Length: 198
Image (cartoon, rainbow, N blue to C red; front, side):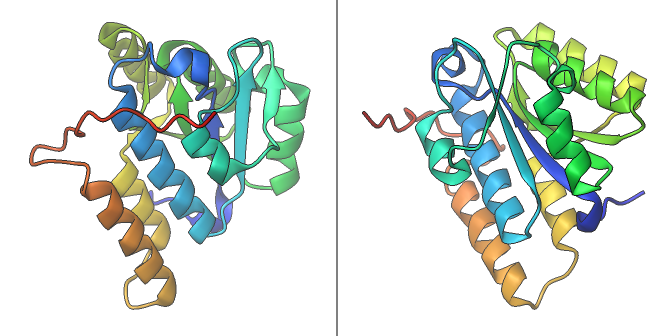
């Protein structure tokens, strides 16, 4: 069953300065999350970002897009944060698109709790990662078995966009093209250092 943008929220989990550089494939992941955030803004999806306490702020390239309204938490599951759930419930939407880190900790626990709460959950596999690839892959498998759907950045962007030939589609096309400039043949991002602003 296709997702519909009118029922979707994007949740960006804990993409923070003190954590991100320890994550496998973090450059590619961050670029993919950036594209997903830009597309969600263009399509007017609500975006909820979280920060785990004591791990620094959201990485600058995302902070510039997300602003300062992130949910700060101590719990691993975002759903154990009353502020996060207040934001989710206030939207009236039941489909949560999940990205961020780490896949096997905060992302997985959030996905499992959302499923228990009868939300539809899409986990974006190329926009989430862990320190170890085995942890990431095992968590993706567990979430899928629990009922979460696994998708990719480009697939979900086009699914949300729905049709070509509109001004909205042209904005999306620019975002996709920008992302692809960093993706050589085979789909693996060119490793380049993230921008750090001081």
